[in-house]
Each structure stands twice: as C-alpha cells, then as structure tokens.
Length: 291
Length: 170
Image 1 (cartoon, helix red, strand yellow):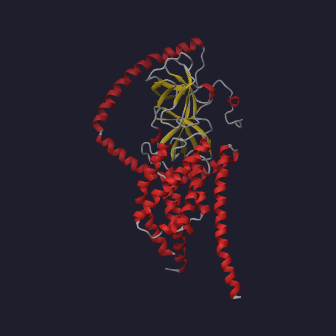
Image 2: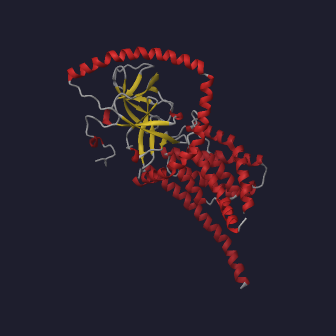
C-alpha cells in the first residue's frame, strides 16, 4: 500500500507539470487563434467586445472618479493662478465675438431671404447626447475612446462625436450602456471633409499620429497652412460643417491637419444625433440592419 | 474573531493578488486626463503579472492572467488576444524563473523587471506588427516601457504591503 502510494506520488508530480505545460500551450494557442479571428473581423468578436465593455463600463466609471477629482483640483489651482491673464484674454475674445455677432445678425436675415428665393431646404437641427469618457486606448496601436452611454441613450453606430466645438470621431461600436469612439486620428478613420473657404472636397485619414492627413484633394486645389477643415456631409453620415481643425503643414505628398479638440483630455463629449435630410440612410450601408 | 469571519478574511486576502492584477490592467484604460498619456499609458499589467508570478503564482493561475489580458484587449479596442498573449508569456517566463528572483532585494527585483519588460514589449511590438501587417512605430512603445520601469518602485512597494496581508492570512 505504502509502495503504491509512493509510486502514485512519483507519477503525480511530473503529471502535474505536464498538465501545466499543456495549459500554457493551450492558452498561447488560444491567444493566437483570437488574434487571427479578430483580424478576420468575425461578428462574434464584436459581439463579445460590446458585451464585455457593457459589463465593465460601470467599473471604469468608478475607477475614473479619483482621476477626475484630482484633475478638477489641479484645474482650479491653475485657473486661480492665471485669473488675471485669463480675464484679459477673455475680454479681448469677447470684443472680437461681439463683432462677429453683429456680422451674424446682419447675415442671418439675408441668408434666410436668399434661401427662400432659391427655395433651398433648411437643414434639420442636430440633437446631442452627452456622454462621459470612461476609457481610452491605453496603448499605441489604436486611437479609441469608451463612452458611458449606449443604445439605451439613443446612440447609434456611425454617429459623429464632437467636443468643445470640434469633431472628435465617430461611433464604431455600441452596446446597451457603452459605446466606442473611433477617433479621427486612428489608423482606420476616414472622414469626408471640405476646405471651409474653397469648398474643395477631400478625405481626412488618420495614421495613429497626432496630425491626420488630408487625402484625395482635387487636382489644382490650393491649400495653405491655416486653412480650416470642416465635415462635408458627403455620404450622409455626418452633418455638414462640423469644425475639425486647421492645416498645419503642407509638404510634398502630405497635408497635415491639427484637430481643434485636444483629444486626450476629454471628460465629456457630445454625440450628434442626425438624420440625413436628403438621402435614404439604408442605401449607404449604415449598419445595414437599421430598418 | 469567529471562525466564519476568519475564513472570509482569509478568502478575501487570497483574492487580493488577482484583484491587484485586474486593477493594474484597468488603470491602463482609465483616462487620467494627463496630456498625451493615452497613447503611452504605462503597462502596469506587466508589473503586476511579474510581481505576482514570482511571489504568488498559485493565486494568479495562467487562465486568470489570460482572462485579464483579454479584458484589456476588449476594452482598449486593440488587437484581440495581444495583451492576453503578452501577459501569459510573461507569466510563464516568470514562473519558470521565480526561484532566481524570489526573496531577493528590491534592487534585484527591479533589475529583473528591467530585463524582462523589454522582452514583453518586443513580443507585443512583433505581434502587433504582424497583425497590422506593417512595422509599428516603436517610439510610443519605448516611452511606455520607460514609464513602466519608472513606475515599478511605487507599485512594488504597494504589492509588498498586499503580499504581507496575504502571507498573514495564508
């Protein structure tokens, strides 16, 4: 009996090591398999993603609280320090804005009159859904953000996301109470844009750097540093005329745009709920299953 | 203390290493509002897996490490399986080398991490480059690596406290 037990023990130790090795190999294989599946864009992977993100969002929301509190205190301290210079800057800005207000007042009735003359339709007003940012990519390979609002708040895939008056990105995945924003700097982001002055159309494509590239400019289009870029509304996904940024460099082969919004310091963003006024949405493949 | 309360606290203490690993990974995702940090968030998960694989490998079994890595990948929106692969590989390596590192001084632990973390980052870079089918910019990853190594001492201190609590309960 004692002999048998001893033999069992002698066998059990290598067996345990063997099982452990097997488990290690299995896990590494599973990770590799997941990478291949994710690359192949399996629908199941996306469902798993939204399900897990939905469950984890409340936890992230709690974890982000201390950081938010600390940042508020720092912000308050900073604004106390710079209260005088800030006041001067705001006064100047206010004076400038008053002039613009006068211009806008003058142009508004004129614009309405001209629209009536042309019988041009009026763009429907956008509605906004405010959401808190609870997660970022936490790594160098993607540029995304997690929001603590989802389908139940009225967010849909493909909607534009703005903050501080500038375009941030679009909704790439949406769960019940969470959503993922693909930032305009991400490698996979393509936004149809227009130059604000000349109305030339182009595509703003991200490459994971801070400054996305302006591509597919029409031949002969003149661009200069400082030109403003807005959404063109082509494709019917985003409303027309959302401010995106300014051209900061024009080099041979690459026109770079600086986004208006500081993308990595956002606490809240607004999701633009927008129905294309002219085009039936389904024809543009917006999610396919929307009907 | 009653027997029940004792068992409960013991159970809780034994769950602490796993919780530490999970929280470390989640804090990579939580936005801290620090400028430019989102692209180069320190890889706290590497520190946690390194530490606990050396000190309490039986409390963070490989399938758990895999799951935590997967949660990171799902939340970050990055390649699914990337962080799971890196963390499990790190776990396997550290478990195999734990006899060399266990019970050594803080300096030796940090030095060990300085040797191991670049390996993990290199693995991450290679797999990501294959995944995206084009060599990734190594600079953000290097910045991440440096930040992670700099943050090792405070995290090590914190984990040492937790380790004491676990040792008392076990």
